[in-house]
Image (cartoon, rainbow, N blue to C red):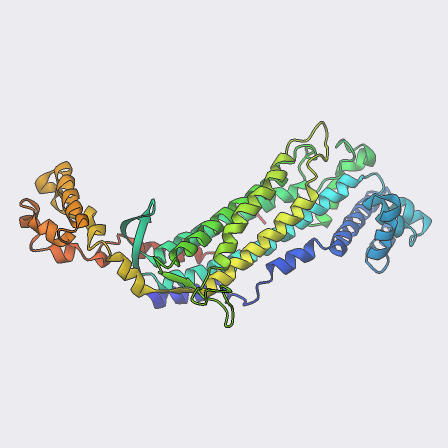
Length: 462
């Protein structure tokens, strides 16, 4: 079965890249030079849409497009201009217009306002960030499924409220992680659809007044030029719920990843020792305790699960603007911070998944620590038809207490009971074999691999 699942995995997913480059890619998205290029890209798209509507000349639009680059509008020149005018949009436009003909200079930024451009830039940055995160999370999904397949039948303790509950397999545990990861990928796709509706040119108070009677035609053409749309007919600048959703989604992903990190962190505790997050050769965990192998990336995931939701709270606060819009939450820096943090988080997960080593022997030792008490439920189910459910539970609980008090092990306590002993004598060894009481854990792995072998489809219909 493992060979079949592994073959399915290779068909469904390309081999994950070794490089963990999401953070680097997202940092580039928010680099000031990239930001200015996006601003110029939006301005060029506006000019072309206006030219097609007959509002400005095609020559002016072509000149604006041809000069929308960092050679014509150098970053250092814009920064120097900003030191004078103290307004980033005005600084960029001033530098740009100096390279344009009078006609093109007049046409540049005609009928629009800064919020249209900067919010549009944020939309592009968020979409690009989500695309980068999505690719990295797909690679993480592949790595999770490889582990799940390899440990489809690896027995371990299933714990509830920190206590031994019932046997499971490590593969089942990791398949659960992979399925949660896929749900987040689907949420990314859904959010991207909503973000694409936000490419609007509404002006200062969202009324289209600056673009005149052709405003909607120009707005739709502008959105198409940028690969956005369909455009939402209502202004959204004062109701920033989709930007808030962006923060909430990254926070939700961070909490899921923190849960995985926390699980690995706890499973590698000295007293449990079921997995190890290996360290690179030469890496040291302590300056004074050379025996330690401290968690690293698992701890980082727990950190991101605290930091990213804190960032998200600012974007959620910004959902409630005053009147037609305000900037009291100052969310722009937060969008950058939360995006880069999320990228570093998915990179940390990729490294962690490569570093996990599973100690199957220790998993079995821990499973056997209670001398079969982890199968107490099975014993109850086996004898309840003869003794009744409630009485069966009372007798098995009493046997467990005797075992915990040290009088005898659980097996002996069961057989010593006058009512349980005769019902269990012939089958006690089979009933206390955890390998035969994992339910459909392995089948869940199989089903999850089959489900995730299908690539997620865009809900946008494109």
